[in-house]
Image (cartoon, rainbow, N blue to C red; front, side, top):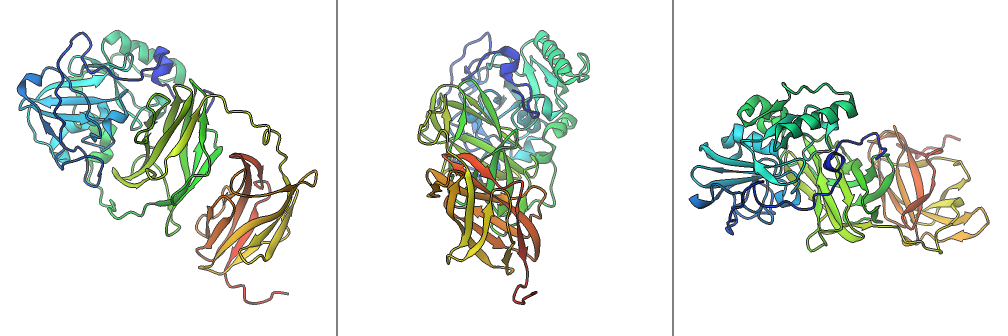
Length: 475
């Protein structure tokens, strides 16, 4: 990948796809227990059953890992563990209690302070983590870990984890790769650790935000009302508004895309920053969607998609505030198309609009855009909302374009570096809502999409929006 946000991932290291995790420790085979554990994770996740984050197993199962039950949440971060098989971990205590985790970093945090996560401080009998090279569960108390210190170095779930390897040679080779790729300074002696090195200091390094008490934690945080989905190059893929998408995301078979949420606002028009700490972006496959088309990995501040086989699948985006899901797009999954994009002779060579009239819901003309400029500004009273449509849209050949919300769509967003608190902008396929939030001036960009692809953007000439008292006539 050529993106500046590219990071080492498992495919970079071993050159193969690990699509599922064998539920066995490398080198041994054990029976699995069919009993599902109780709910794991923080309060507020309704994807699992009971309130306890732990599940009791029979003593004879203490020497083998079990399957990760459907819907089982991580006991630390609340992410659904079976959705992340390439990173999973689990432990079992001497009393038979078994606990599941999305990753080795969350297992470390729980091991350091189980009572913080509503667990009992009982001795640990066995631990299993997922080997970075093979994707198999291995003995977490006998393996080696690379103490990764920069989230940009590994395309890792939850941003950063101690990275497990079955043998020291694998850990040393991984450190060599990191040092070569990122001009890093990892040390074989200092940065290859074992389970005996797991303590609170290390846990705070990887999962401090889950272990610290946060006085600013707001359990009543408002959910996002809209957001832009962009890729690692900053290209906007789509905008989600309240309950629907406008297009699908495409990825080539064997290729990967990293997706970010930007321009996120709640119902009050307040901005939300996905920092991977207070707010996190997560994603998973939709229920009943094919599981062999695309793999999905949430990494705190972005989502990693990898095309596995040609076809179509649905994915659900989730926004978490301090670990609790405050928005899920489960009612409207985004479609992911893997494979070559079909050629469509009807839109392959569509000409972009050359000019259009911008009108409001009453048919009143606000301005005309011609080639590369506007003639006036959009004025609003504070608290006012206006619905905007594009009419008399023509291309360079004088051919009319019908913005029907199907073949052609009208989209809008705030301009880069524009004031984010003056207006909120929401696209609805064939029209745009502009809500005046507070007095001031800002700029918005209009975009015309043809079958989901941006054919015209007014980014070089944003429209000025003035919010305030406009009852007087300056003329």
